[in-house]
Image 1: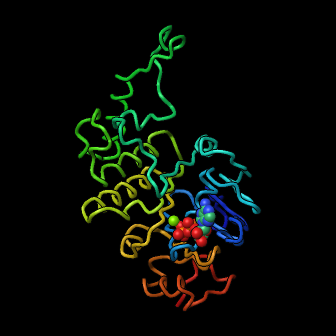
Image 2: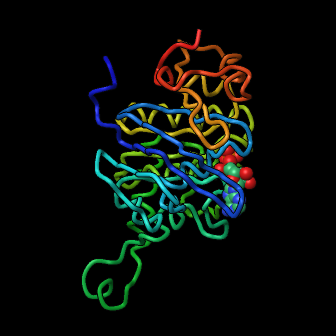
Length: 267
Ligand SMILES: Nc1ncnc2c1ncn2[C@@H]1O[C@H](COP(=O)(O)OP(=O)(O)O)[C@@H](O)[C@H]1O
Ligand SMILES: [Mg+2]
């Protein structure tokens, strides 16, 4: 199978983003194909978070073009990106610690009671939200969250991450972007989040996974996008490149010619 004829679910072309004199993105490109896990790796400050924030609607690029399913988009907000099926779990988790799991899942898209009470008094349908939340978590294979009414501040790091991922995955989205989801997690919790990512892919979603953890990246990624100095330095696969190769590209010790950056083995 060649990916050349398939329309990417997400595509960024020549994206530029500056903050004063700091150039976060310097003509960055990205393609995410249907049903794949694309890992985005790179040193601190390489522009990984800035890149995905453009797709998430959190940043407006200074220049360059964004496409979702081949359609040119200009997102003004994260809600607008969501409406296009792009859900993002940011590096700084967007969960509300004091609210319970169900309320977190429905934050910003609360369900109202049917009929008069919901329409006129905007009464929340808490029971339905709890039932649906429990089902969503079950669908995602998250069995460690026993009590849907538990406040999120009482959960472990991995469970919070699970809530954030569940929130992102629960609403008919096509693309899930995860910015360093396992950075603060232990081994078991990380394994659970990785399994969740594989489950999402198996359900046909496309996933962007930003990570520093090479073994994790090589375990779950179909392709690996290497970011360096605000640009894409290479795209490799776990089959075509070794972890040492990827680190060498990240640090600039190895360079890949532009015309060979797509899927081409670096050895
Ligand atoms: N909101 C911001 N204001 C100023 N500088 C920023 C901001 N966001 C990112 N940067 C800078 O842009 C560069 C890329 O940052 P970032 O995209 O967060 O990189 P990464 O996620 O790869 O570590 C860094 O030099 C960072 O300091
Ligand atoms: Mg980052």
